[in-house]
Length: 447
Image (cartoon, rainbow, N blue to C red; front, top):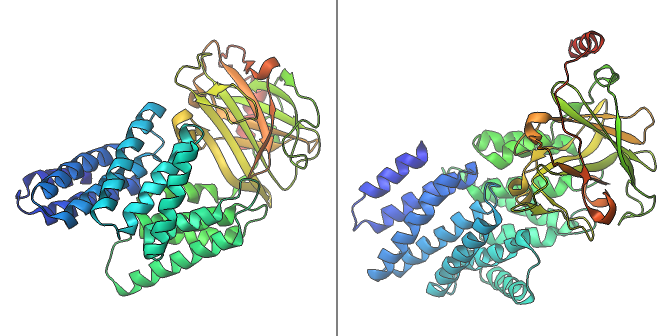
């Protein structure tokens, strides 16, 4: 509703009041970015592009710069809503880079535009390997932005992100400290100014939590408190809502709820073939179902550690057209459903990233986009995990296939596949009516 109202205000604003219109476009884009509102981002992006052209035609370079920057900001935000297919993302990225570069050309000291130009180029990793020339342009723009204005919130945010990247483990301390410093500066500003927290406040607070979660034993109590404060600041922030769910304590499903399941073996995997020798090593996969859920049982070579991760990578219909490539080593498998459970044990349960998403959501790291109602229980043998997935969220067809994967709560390590790296065929699923004994057992567990 707010996006519609702001659009009407933009349309009704006097044509000669460019500054006011650019301000309204900024508000529309920033609010839509925080809410993962693709339609609001589209409206704001298109309006900002028109305002940029009007400002240039009238010779108002500062407003033209800001409007071009807003187009790039809307593009960068839309790349991560998790609602766009690869073809749309490619088109958006080209548009965003063009406008960010134009804003930087209009003002060579505008660090915000330079860093967005770098960030949108970096986002191309979602669509495949980044060519060397794109990587070089990305790094050059980030370095230039930091030299121009290291304290500008967008610049500080992406500089901290670059410092936090570690493909094989936890975020380096320098990256965590950079996010801590940025959060403290932003909070100090809000303590002295009556300014509503914007997208860079949300991103900074959220990523300060994310980099601290990227350890085997995160200090989750402090992170929970930080997420509660962020939600109090911006209850509409989609990223804050997802992170709050990620750090929420969950209980293992009761043993009585899964005791009567009939298991069908789907496949086995050799020992010792994972990318990370110390990580959990997947050995077998089995399937069962009840009236509402498909249950997958992954068994590992050794007892599961305090923190671990599993994925169920699913092609719902056997047709890879338009699906997303699985990132397993040497894999050619494509998927349109991804079940994730990257968890850390805590007392009688766990916390972590748990949910079901589609291919578009997976590219944007929105792992609970379709459902968060995934149930977990460690097996009695301490080497297996039962994963209960709502059948409606998977929506499997007759030719569905699955790849099972395991590792730590931070890193994928091992796949269980069919021969040649293909997915394992899933049998047709028919909802089963629970027997009286299982119905009574389920009612007892629920009570």
